[in-house]
Image 1 (cartoon, rainbow over the protein chains, first blue to last red):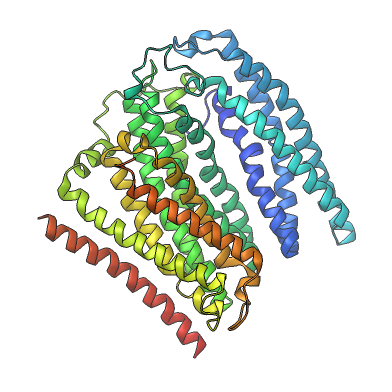
Image 2 (cartoon, one colour):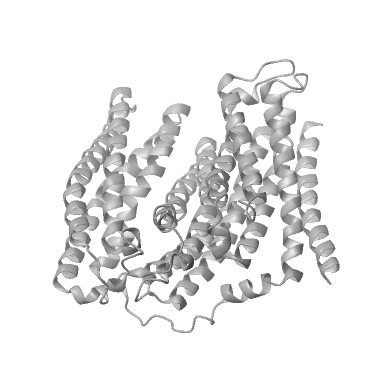
Length: 475
Length: 33
């Protein structure tokens, strides 16, 4: 089982993402618990913070071990010129501050849970203090994470001119940088989401089920920028000596499976959130279907992450890297979809998809802006699945179209705003599905001002996504 | 061939999408009645 770490560096890569990226999700759950006053979610989030604080121990031990081995064996850097030392020192120094903040946060969370067992309630002031410390820890973790990624990822720092790379054959460094950051969110998010979801199913806590379903949906949406930035980063990575195209293709194949898994998990999770609004209950069978999809997808993502780590981390390799770049599915799909015969059918479905998305977005946002006031928002809420199916259709068809000519697409000027606003527009739609104040808007009533701002953002996002796509070949 | 593939893919995808939406809404209509 190659997922089991064979070195300190490997263990550090696996465990260190939890105190940093995992903290985003645990804090998200914690804030949700405070806003909804869900007692089980509060206690589970406090337990989550205490667990993250405990993970400081393996993170520190493995970090020290891997730092010693990297400094002692520069040959593990595979002959590449990697000015790692400045990032390494800064990463080590900042990690002390971040670890101290996390230990204090986790210790207070653990103490509060201990006190709860004796007095039966949680102190409001302590909960607020833990939240403030958690946010401070997160800010420190952002700095530590960024410095950590820069240690081994030469592509985040190198100057293309110094390697005499033809600018016409590479992609901007930003793609690789964004991929480095966003690829951890679906994997770590699914781990945290699964933990909370299992507790929610066991304790039959409706609020916690909803919060966990939101995590699955958001992580699935983040799968889109992860896949796209990964596809774009490939063109830059292959320009660096020592990077294997076959290893990248092995990673891409599983990324494709993960994207499909996230699509199924995200849609089934969102349908339950939508259904809950109308019926006030979940379908038990469907909740377990979401669990099955999430577990399978998590397996795909673990393998994808492992294969991705092999690309640029010679220090964690145990087995030899694959050498045959054509032994994988992705290059064959690229060849196939390049044929107009297979491209046009998916492009046609893509057009149907954005018609559905824009139609739904327009109907929902215009009602929020004050059109058709005689229609209650609960009636408008019924059409949301049309838009969600449209988004799902377009994720898969768009991904296939991207594979037809990735290099050209990712280098087009309008592709960046399209990809920037796509996850924003999709995540903001969750607000329409979940908002209590919006759900209560009856016939003849005005929507709250906050809803109007979100509606404006959603409308702007989808207009940019559609225009960005249409203008691809022309700007 | 392009025509046949396009029509087949479009009918299948839209059929699955609209069929799922019909089933979801039927559940809510039945619960409401």
